[in-house]
Structures are given as structure tokens and as C-alpha cells.
Amino acid sequence: MLIIEVFAGSYLSAAVATTGVLAGAYCAYHLYNEAQKRKLPTTWREVGSLKDIYIYPIKSCGPVQRDRAECTLLGLKDGWLRDRLLNKSANNFRLVLYASNNSRKLKKPANNVYKFRKADTGALPDELPFHLMNEASIDDLNTKLQGNKVCYKNFRPNFLITGTGPYEEDDWKYVKIGENIFEVIKPCTRCMLTTIDPETGIRDSKAEPIQTLKSYRQITDPSARPWSGSAPRMGVHLALRSKNGGLVSVNDRSYLSAAVATTGVLAGAYCAYHLYNEAQKRKLPTTWREVGSLKDIYIYPIKSCGPVQRDRAECTLLGLKDGWLRDRTLMVVDNKFNFITARAYPELLLVHPTIRNSVLSLQHNDMEILNVDLSEGALPDEVPFNLINEASIDDLNTKLQGNKVCYKNFRPNFLITGAEPYEEDDWKYVKIGENIFEVIKPCTRCIMTTIDPETGVRDSNAEPLETLKKYRQLENPDARRSAGDSPRMGLQMALRSGNGGIVSIDDRVYVA
Image (tube, rainbow, N blue to C red; front, side, top):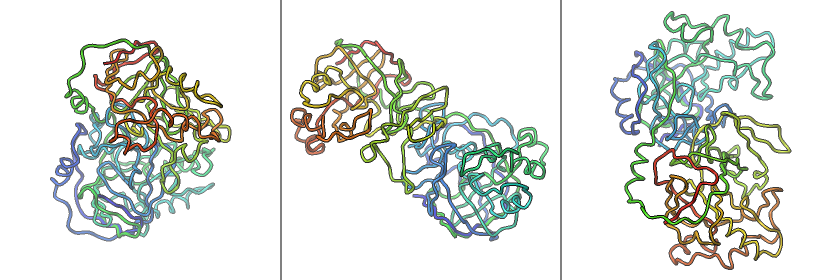
């Protein structure tokens, strides 16, 4: 594995920039071999040390600082924490986690000034997986600013290095941090995001520091200028050229070499064609029996937070999709990147998402509305699709002595009506519209069902869980050993028909 630690020396060496058009979906091993094809520098000059490492799990949101992290072809990684990641089966971006070890597929670069290899695309950065800033360059910029000063946070780097001269990075071709070798692909051209105060979220009224940067940090290469326009340069974009999985640490020494930079424009994502073919290997049923209709569809863009109701949605191998809205593509973490759920923090259920175009808005009574662009990645507990039978919920309510429950306590994707209570226990396959799902397992329930979805308050009698335990235990001995006394309610399903099929409210539901 690639582990990176903050503060290591920085090293460079003499070399030329690399070429290659971004395309295809390649395994990490093949990408690594591709990265080795060019002879790497062997002579290095020390220029400074790595001061900080930052990972941005959600694009356009704040960083997580790390003392060490893993360098992969997709960018930085620390355990489950990944940098600006998407999902491998769609053409749009997703947030938080990109499970594949492959770089995403990209369209042909918009210009030929900067050259990428197929392995350089990463997951969900704007251009390349690694971004380096020189602290001395920031310090020099601050001497030119008349108003508020800036810091590394305005520029959102992965690597912040110290100990080298201002703007010396402009001439680097390769950078070596610890045992990791990076090629400088292009300068980082800056946009209005740098003018937003990272502590307050307020945009600078004079559009600083970008206006000052424009006065002296323009790209001078005539062939690159038409692509960059008036956007000034600050920092460099890097691609990994050494073995996948090397460690970088804070205080690692950094080395570099003289060179010019190169670039490309990113688009697209990793194809799910292979996954679809895998899903087709099992022979599917041809005879179906109607059992009811689909009543509601729910998509949970944030794990453990509220749902977005949809009348129709697309079924993908990674779960439900409706435009930019994807199921469980975001998760909540603390400052140590411990995964947070409503099991421990029930108030998460009171975070209500709404979607408009590609912007997800998060609302809570105790916070301002938060808007983020949606990206893709899948984080359900077990399998992508969860189905609940309304008749089973109704039957459960006849057994409850206190407060009644509803579908919200069980957080399904699909709520069906018209079937008999618990009839779903015997289903092997479910067909909704033209979409075929295989029932993988019953959904065993936890204390999360005891949290009132309207108030976020846990039921004092642990209902409905205690009642469910009395009559909804798993009977299979092997399954019982795994589930313990967790009762079953609903189904976990996997898509077995073609990727991208549509489901709609009132679709007929068939089983086999």
C-alpha cells in the first residue's frame, strides 16, 4: 500500500514532460507498467521538505489534514479516506469513495500543450491526482497583497512544501518526495475559488488574490495561453511515476529537476461494462408471478441522512440514480476520519437533502443550508438495493404497543404495495419494470430502526426492534450465527439486468 506522511524532503531531477491521450479503463497493474516505460531520473537536487498533506474527500468541500497518506495512481489515500473520488460506472462525478484501483476514462484533451498518460487521470480531481504548493510562493504573494493575506487553504493542495525559493517550482520537471517520484504535468491555473475565505466561506470583495496573481503570474507559453486565458498560475499538478503504494511523510525531503509543464482536460468516468457482463453470467428466470406494484422510490445521497423521494429513477450496478442524484454517494466523517452514522448520532436523520440540477442542498434546523455538487460512489452497508413490503410494515404495526412505524424507519430504496405480509421472505428474484434484481439476503435490522425519523429521538423501549426480535428471527442456522439476534425486515438485492434501466412509481412488481 502507498502511505504518505507529512514533512519529508522534496527532490527533483532533470527530465522531459510526458505524452499520452487520456482514455480507457486499465487495471492498476497495467497502469503501473505503463508508468515505468519512461526512464526516470537518477540524479536529484534537494530543494526543501514536505510540510503538510491534505486530502479532499468531497470535491469543493474542506480538506482532511494527514500526517501520512498513501500515494496511488488515483491520488491520495488514507484507509477509507480518498481524494476527490467518483464511482466507476457513470459519466458524471460522484463524492467520497471510488472503489476501483483504475484511473477513470477521459475524453481527448482539449489541447495538445500538456500531455497526459492514461494512468494520470485519477478519480475526481479537476485535472490530475496530485497538487503541490510551495509555501515560499504563497509568502511572496502575500507581500504583494494590499488587503487580507492568503494561506495554503485558498489553493487546496495535496502537498505543501517549504524550504525552496518562491516560484522555483515553475521550472521543475520531476519531484521526488521520499521514495515517490512525480512528474510535473502542468502548472495549476487558478480560478475564483481562491478568492473565497476558507475560514468564513466569504468571497473577497476585490477578487483577491486572483487579481494580484493575474498581474504577474500569467502563463507565458503562447501555445498554452489560448487554453488558460487570463487564469494565473500558482502551484503545479503532478502525476505519479514511481511504484504505486510508496510512502510520503511529513518532513520527507523533496527533490526536483528543471523542466517545463504540460496539461489536459478531464471528463468521463470508468465504464461498468465488465461488471454488467459479470452480472449476466447467472441464468435468469423467464417465468414471473405478479405480486404488486412499486409505491415509492427513495434515494439516500448521504449515508445515514434523509432520503430524496423520486417518481422514477435509473437502476445501475451501484444503486439508484436520477441525473446527478445517486444513492449513498456521500458519508459523514469526523476529524480523524472515523465513519459517523445515525446509529451513534441520530440527529443525522434530520439532515434533509434536496436536489436541483447537480446541486445537492442539505438542510438542518441548526445549520445553514449547505450546497455541494454531487459526485458518484457507493456506500450502502451491504448491497445497492433495499426493498420493503408495505404490508409487512402494516402487520408489524398491529403488534406494536406504542408508537407506530413507517417505511422511513427502514430506509428502503423501494417501497412496494399489493403483496402479502412477509411474502418477500420467499422471493429469489424481483422484477420491477424491465429491471431484474436478485435477492441476495434478508435485511437484518439494527437499533437504527428505533430512531424516530421525524424527531431523531431514539425510542425508549427500543421499538420496533424488540418486537421484531420476537417473531422475525432468521431460521437458517448458518445465517443466524452471522446475524445473531438481529431480526429480518425487507430484502437486500443486486441488479441482474442491463445497467441503466428505469424504474418508475406504479411499475408492476414481479417475482420468481
